[in-house]
Length: 184
Image (tube, rainbow, N blue to C red; front, side, top):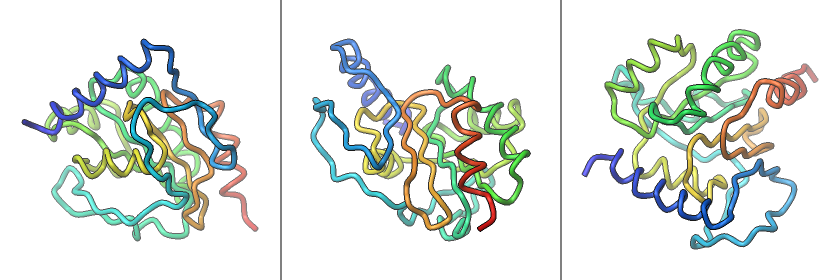
């Protein structure tokens, strides 16, 4: 079974959970979650962990490459409508913030559709190919329902400052990036 099929099974479970009245919402790491999860509890981590995934050229990319930067880590897939909506905004924000902020996309999908998507949307930030461990990492970072997209923003120190399940728009993200990337 390909990674996409595993993920579709997980997403199916999330859809059932959503249909039962559970909704995605932004999670601020400073505020505890009040909704009881129907999924087994996992200890959330509060710092971006070490990771290593291949990019579209097969080169291993490591979390340490992005030390001392504000990081926007986005878990996504080509078949995900909110992912298609937020990607152009992420591309524009990467352009706007330059080397002060680093967007990283971890695709939970197959290589060729991801390559086509990245070319179509002009993705100007690292696009990595995730696997089951990437799904587990997203869960440890707070993605209880394993839905996509899921975005985590960290400060320069690697500490999580925002966890967001679902599409994330520029109006919400840009002020936070401006604050985190300002000198001093």
